[in-house]
Amino acid sequence: MEKDCVINGFAVHAVYSDESVEQIFKPLLVKLLELQRAKGRRIVVLLAAPPAAGKSTLVNFLTQLAGEKGKWTALGMDGFHLKCEYLKKHFTILDGEKVPLTAVKGAPETYDVERLSKCIADVAAEREVYWPVYDRTLHEPVDGTEPVSGDIVFIEGNYLLLDADGYRDLRKTADYTIMIRADEADLRERLIERKTRGYGSREQAEIFVEKSDMKNVRLVLEKSMAADLTLRMGGDGSYHAEAGKI
Image (cartoon, rainbow, N blue to C red; front, side):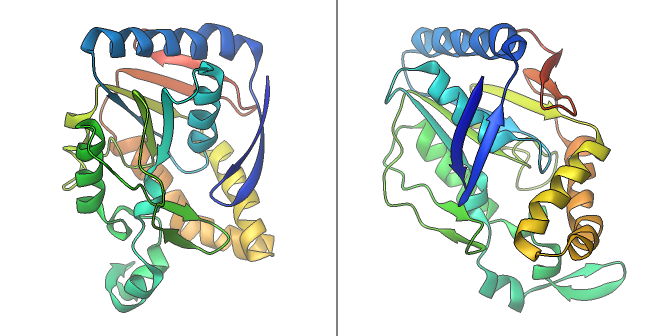
């Protein structure tokens, strides 16, 4: 099954195998629908995955596959990136050297996790929330203009299950959690392809990916807490259930 969408300002063409759709995605949607009906309120589903694991595209695909307009909503945590102006004026230590946070953009410390936590709690409580998004063409978060709606809300992001201060408690608000895993080599190549679109040079993209993105990949793979369902993404983009029951 194929899907065209716009993710963070980029056009994306995704292809999912019939096996993944029939054996994983459709049963997952049924399970979540049953969970929402049993609880009789909005439910929040956190989907964590390393960079380039296709999480943004997947949650958008799932909401469309569900086919109940208005009931399912897909959100991402990238809108909670700290502004570039802030990152330039604040610093961290990288390989023993003091550098601006722009040098590690995408790392956990470059997100406004307090605001993220509050917004997730507000979404779960069905309060009015204007969710921010990240525009990769601007390289900046953009404040939301429409309130969050829907009875089943997917929230995807790298660090939603990270076992670290500021992030550890995010899962307490969730009704269901999903983790996507993938091989580092596959993720590295996908990241280089993505960065090439932004940097124009594969050499520059490779340098950035090695210095920044791959550290985040390993952090997510090694330091994320267990999820209710763990999926593994293959090099061809297919998905298989690795742990947990659908």
